[in-house]
Amino acid sequence: MIYQGKRYGVFGKELDFLVKRVYEKDALASIEAHLCPQCSAPLKVGFYPDGKAFLIGCEGKVPHYTQCQYIDTPPAWWQERVVEVTEWLE
Image 1 (cartoon, one colour):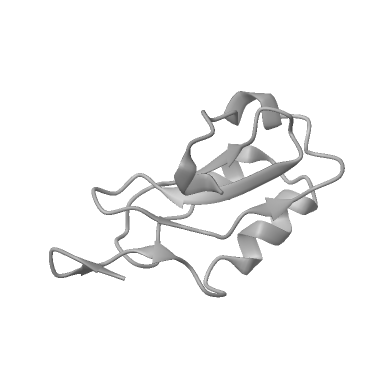
Image 2 (cartoon, helix red, strand yellow):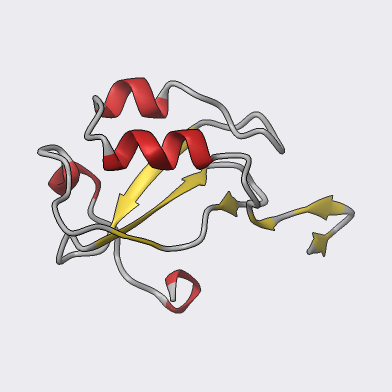
């Protein structure tokens, strides 16, 4: 999608390697050390309040994020990244 001349929306496969690292329960800092491949803003992992789903998104003015990912057993740090569930997450 384009907003004010900038691409935003859901990533394709650009962040699959980081999604995999969440499933592998890697350290949060090592996952969030990467920058958005679209706008170079910092990336942040966000978990649903029940810990059963997450996404990775950037903190840029025009946000980019992965599709919602479902996980049976979240990493130990997941509660550090609980986000308010809003319509854009669904």
